[in-house]
Image (cartoon, rainbow, N blue to C red):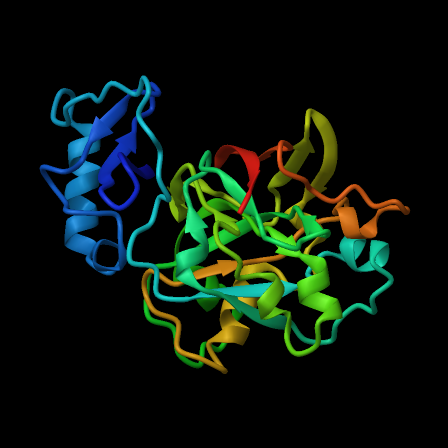
Length: 286
């Protein structure tokens, strides 16, 4: 299923994109696309049954309707740094022996076409297309990557916007360059795991002002999705509604020759992952 949330910010309602591309209202069946829904097999079964029944779900007019983040009440966002071989190479970093972790606050999340704000004083705002993994079952001390995949509810497109000077040049941890307002557009859809045959075979692309900047594949991940979930479960408990941003392929501004083409107000970024949808953001000053 392709689950999404539509409407004004803070007042989104649950919806579904059916096989014909028609937007369907789920608000008569569930209150939201959130942790409670993902943890409730019976509720998910009701959604699947309604989606399969002709005329069961009312159609929505998508014209002019904002698409919000596809997941509400996000618990935590765990991010994996330097998780693509080609990205590590372009930045001159060693291939990590274990996943590099940092966090993004849930309040960085915005819709896939919402405005992204360039922080005040920023000179190095960068782009990163990423596969987001959404947890559907509580995960503790998992034994295998196969178990890790079994705890995934679905996948989405994430834009891990980053301010490199804040991240690298200002001391401390990476988090200060990752948690600026609007720095995690998510969506448009939460695509359930049954529709993604192999999360390690997904092409990812990103354009800036129409110019292709990133053109990669999740096959290049150093730590694949199942292993990332297994690994994290030994350091923290993962709950339904938690999100994992799994890293970005080569092509970020930081990895390009000087003068590096960092983002400025007025730029337009577009990104997509095959089968998971497409995003578009216009940048403005904070």
